[in-house]
Amino acid sequence: MSEHTPARREGGAVARQTGAPPTPAGKRTSWLPGPAQGFGVTFATMFKKVTTEEYPEVPKQTKPRYHGRHVLNRHPDGLEKCVGCELCAWACPADAIYVEGGDNTEEARFSPGERYGRVYQINYLRCIFCGLCIEACPTRSLTMSNDFELADDDRQALIYTKEQLMAPLLPGMEQPPHPMRLGDDEKDYYVRDPKAAPPNRQAAEPVLEELA
Image (tube, rainbow, N blue to C red; front, side, top):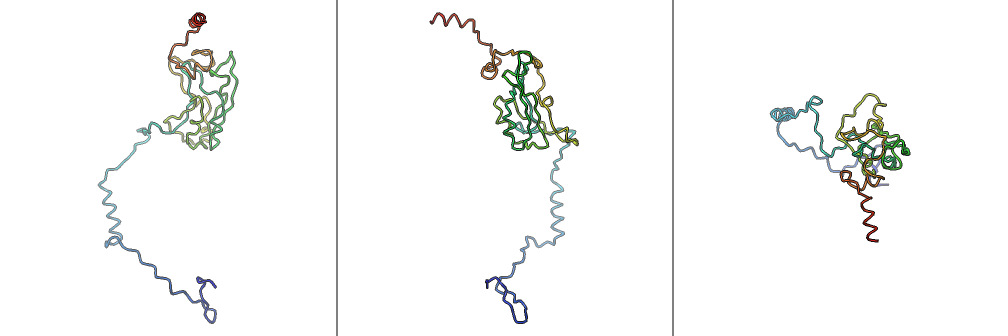
């Protein structure tokens, strides 16, 4: 028989263990009665400064590195940085990103590479704003803004499409599709400084001939 099993008396009655120490009563921190302690907390907070945020009349200022709504960025000439590699969709732990890549052609060019993101969707019903998709993007196309006002009463409206996620056109940008303006290949976009002048290849050829 285990030492924790109560011993049985004659007639079926159970004998209770008497060796256990009694439970100590709670120690009081104040000799004031309970209602007086409650009113003391109320009076102590009455004279403190109240912090009230008048939202949405006064927009809330977030931190600079706040993870908000996603943005698909552009190159300085307007071409899209997204190349449709789908690495952001693979890195998403919530399976909130859907990407379909398409091929660029000389008649219809949307990005400086061979492919571009033809379909791009983010389901904000699933997104947990972890930022892993940002780390996985090899072209720095996908970033996160400070926009946090994403609440809606329509589930379909919370699935953002590529048109909603694309960054707006700034002065000097041209709406794709259009030919490349910053160089002859994608390396001129991703390696060289887009603000610098393109290399003068015609001037470099005679120098190579003289050295030869």
